[in-house]
Image 1 (cartoon, rainbow, N blue to C red):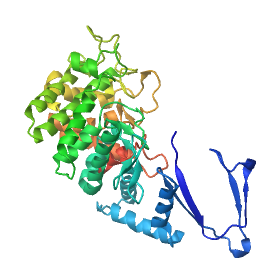
Image 2 (tube, rainbow, N blue to C red):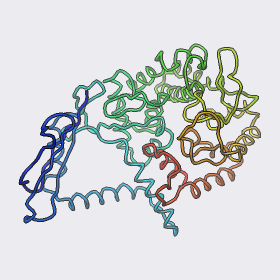
Image 3 (cartoon, rainbow, N blue to C red):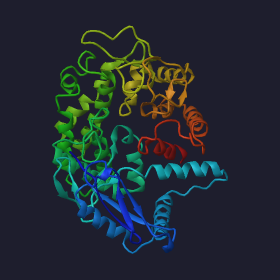
Image 4 (cartoon, rainbow, N blue to C red):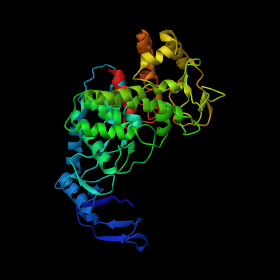
Amino acid sequence: EQHVYFDGKFSRPYRNVTFLNDAQTGTEVAAIFEFDPAQGQVIELDLAISAVDREGARKNRLAEADGRTFDDIRLAARDAWNRELEKIHVETSNEDHKEIFYTAMYHAMIAPNLYSDVDDRYRGMDMQIHHQPNYYTVFSLWDTYRALHPLLTIIDQERTRDFVKTLLAKGREGDLLPIWDLASNYTGTMIGYHAVPVIADAWLKGIRGYDGQEALDLMIKSAMQDHLGLAAYRSFGYIPMEDESESASKTVEYAYDDWTIAKMAQSLGQNETADTFFRRSQYYKNHLDPDTRFIRARYRNQWFSPFDPYEVNFNYTEANAWQYLYAPHDITGKMQMMGGKQGLEQYLDELFTAETSTTGRQQVDITGLIGQYAHGNEPSHHMAYLYNFVNKPHKTQERVYQILTELHSTAPDGIPGNEDCGQMSAWYIFSSL
């Protein structure tokens, strides 16, 4: 059982309070507060929350709202957001483009959220109370390791340091790095162990202030679990589909995560560990069929068939085979298996010009389609940039510009899919610069 505590104060005394259903305790308490209208029509309520206790909520309220009016806080919030948005200055005569860009900046800074109270207390992954300043939650890591966290390593290194320290604290408290952390819960949502690349990216960019060896130990622990297909992954170099759902996606994403572990170990001078994980990072090749040039699911002794690259099934995570050509750490190796630069270019051309329909089960996340490129979900987000590796940068420019201008707008539906805690907007920001 988990609680959220709150503490509030009205700007003036209320005249009467009526509890609905005569219930003053429980999980569904509702009340009507009555005020004397002769004292004015405006009533302000200062309200703060805490995951620790009511005293934490009270301290949070006093620290942030005591003696301040709604307008005081509104103006302070505006100034704070302006300081954040000014980290990137855009000059353009197109006001719509500017509005989209700064909306993306806003979206990219909403999560992760600060979870510790003003006295540095927070409820950890073990549900116990701990102390650490600037402890965060809402790490949508399957989404955000791709562009959001790399963006924040550039424009907000202090918060990035706090994110890494938070992830390590969660690893200590729960004995495992989180995959998709939410309010002291692991949730078990999505695949991979993508806290690993977030930590490695920060470390390799020189964002320090934490124990690198502890970080590496926790990263390795994530990779050495025996569930979610990892035992088979280590034994066979791939995950048989009869052992685990979404096996093709899990293998290729584990391989990328392993590459980041290898880079972290290498930076710490632990070459034997680095070699082990560099070798594991090549396991994606065991799912790449050189004949079809697709990442495919496989049984222990043969490819899964019949094969339809348009089919959305349980071999991939929120995608089909078209959308899961994934090995950003080894583009050269992937390209060699696909027939060299010409083969990869042909694949990309066909990806962007294929029919937009899919077969198999319905997947609401497959949106923002250009051919079978699905910009509304994360597995496709790197693909337009692969043209650079076949010496056709003009095709990258063409497709990126098309995505920026056709799939993003100032309309209410101006984002081509799930924002996913800032990942969609971070892609837009990087691609606009």
